[in-house]
Amino acid sequence: MSVLDIFSRLTQQADLMDAMMKKLGVADEMWKLPDHAGVLRRAANRCLMCDRPDACEHWLANEANPDEAPGFCRNHDLFERVLENMENEAQPVT
Ligand code: SF4
View (cartoon, helix red, strand yellow):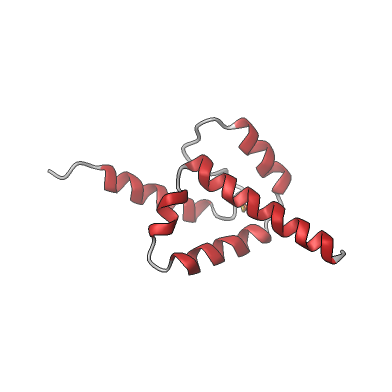
């Protein structure tokens, strides 16, 4: 694998992670997390190790308004926790 191939893969996986966060609507919330830099770095590392970028791209292109990330996403559980946080914050205080 050439250096260019490595940069190309880095860029593609970063774009997919960005697109996934936007599709799920968690992008802004991720930046509000305590230690968001560390969380995002670990998420990016998991994304880099993902062996399903083609399936990810296909899923992103075909899901209009998903409730959760696909099961094969290495960041599924992280995104799920963020979505749960958002849901809890949206609950009216009674
Ligand atoms: S499916 Fe893979 S490439 Fe897509 S966002 Fe999740 S970890 Fe990244």
